[in-house]
Length: 164
Image (cartoon, rainbow, N blue to C red; front, side, top):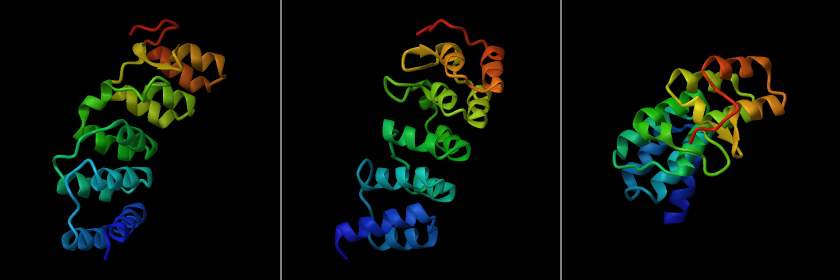
């Protein structure tokens, strides 16, 4: 089997949550250490919300490094996936998604109350949060975010001023 076809099968297994097939494939065609194919598999599993695959890959490849792409994929995977990635890479609590937003800003932009509650409960800094350089509370108010989101932001100390 070529490296390319092995890669395709591995990514399909990650996307579909076929842990048994992925284990069998990696046992017979080991992937090199990250960041190459392993990172791609981890990102794919995160986006597909395949928690068991994410956990397996992190255990199998303990030298995996965090990256912006992995951070975004884990966030996109929802609270359950994001919590697994944060447990492995707690430093991501201090990271943004680039110039556009940080996790709180993205949750507010997405009107994702569940993710917002998770972030606030897990120590993310609402006072330094932004979306497109706009303080997160101001962004929420200007974009008619649900009252529950605005209330949560105020409750946790968000202001109209950025502090970064």
